[in-house]
Image (cartoon, rainbow, N blue to C red; front, top):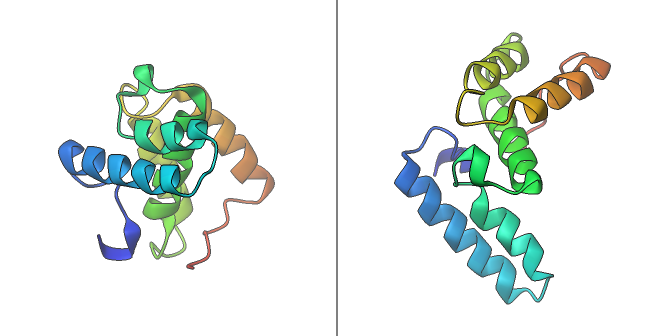
Length: 111
């Protein structure tokens, strides 16, 4: 996946990657709850635990804002807001917006 960007992939591919990621986490010996968060990122928003909703929204924001130029952060946030009807939890996106507003919507660093 170019630059690790999964937010724009088809749902089936997102699911496959999430399950693979969860399997990797389980092999590390980390608490199984962490693996569940990774695995559940590809679930429908309403079915996700809160931690998976947060990780999914922040991951998508970073992917969308990275390398998008000066307007990238605002555009990325707007795309997330437009997708709150099903893909992203509205309360998570608005919390992300509040955090970003404290940092003046900075572009995530690559790496």
